[in-house]
Length: 244
Image: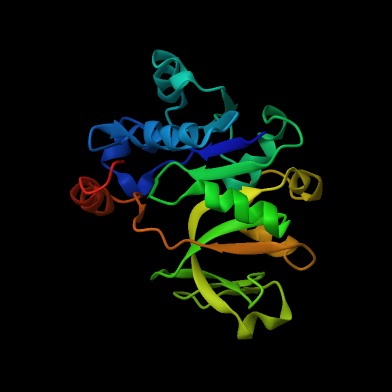
């Protein structure tokens, strides 16, 4: 069994003016809403249940799913209307909506990728890691660091210089950029001590001190963060070359 979670609760402030009247999840790329694209990729993978968290224009997302009969997928809504909980808090709140004891594939709604998710799942199972994080070699302002064993060792914000060390060998580790796709074992939920609103990256850095948290190197042709209008427009031009 396999769960998936689509993070769709963000305010989408970077995507204004597109998000003035709709949530980021319903912004269209080549005529198709980002949420529909994410659901389609997960449906093709054969996930058993998808949980979607909502906050900004939550009613529009619920209406969209209803109008499309949930695209033939078992979909549950994690309601964050009252308080936006960030990625870590959002995952924790959704815990009881997942099929118990099954892993959760987390997918940001504003990601466009040609990654073969089956390879991620196979690699995760072989590694017996608690978390497998999809990482790419690309320019970014923030990096996660991984050692020779692909183990998470730290995080750095290159703009501010802020550094968070998870393991002593961070200085000998390689920086990689996070792709917004990760696969977590169900055991993770028992290890979450944080309350309320918190970042899933901070949770991972805390757990990396004692748990197996590894990088899955993504070398697929296409990866896009669609969080800004110019990125959305650039993707429009490239998407015609791919069956996406």
